[in-house]
Image (tube, rainbow, N blue to C red):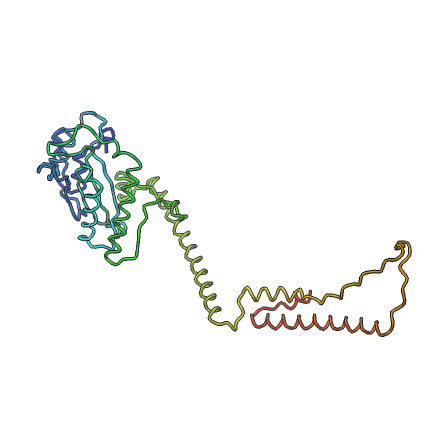
Length: 342
């Protein structure tokens, strides 16, 4: 939150807490006492901070006075979504514990404001604005040097991870099964598109009924996500039905499993015929004459009768295999007769 964008710490603190604060540097008064939706307001400071830092107006005026450049960053803000399953008191305890462990121990002072859901928005959108100083606060006021590590992306990622852990611990402690994840949707393996943060100006335009490009984008993303969610539900329903069918089959051993049925059907469509007896090794003799067929004694009537009986047995075996396959197909509500005929 910097001056180069025309923003000030005093205005931000007044708006988020619903207070009236006069900026001693510019003489401008920011009066937001009529705003609604502020459920809780608190100032948290390091143990050795002066008493005046507990007052929002004096804290943020001092933060403004500590900066001399026209493009200075005067405050830092983190916005966190609070679990709607918890009560206000439980969310306050969760939030203050997180702020103490991650910001106050580093020397920051923090203004913590819990906001309820907007009347025209999602009733579960309970969130908190954490307004932080950019300099460590000591008994003598703000330090001259700004810690650069507070601006590192790795530090922000660690804060996000710590917040997820605090929320999950609170949900578990109060008996809720839901959990949150600080990772991106892609890192979680969730194929859903994320919406864009609108910011205060765009949000105000949308509330007045004005269509914005960012708002239209988010609405299109939400429609696509709803369609994707429906498809995921259908897939889950099918997988659940398949799992139930497999459980039922395991509980009823007398019924063939689907895989076994298909295997049996495939085997019956291609019946295994008995192999003919191996041909005895030929005796060594004169070279074979390719121009004339080999001469041999004619088959006897008994040999011809045996070959005819063997052919009849093969035809009967194949007919029985067809009949068995048709019977199993009827039991499973299928009719593979034409395919078996082919």
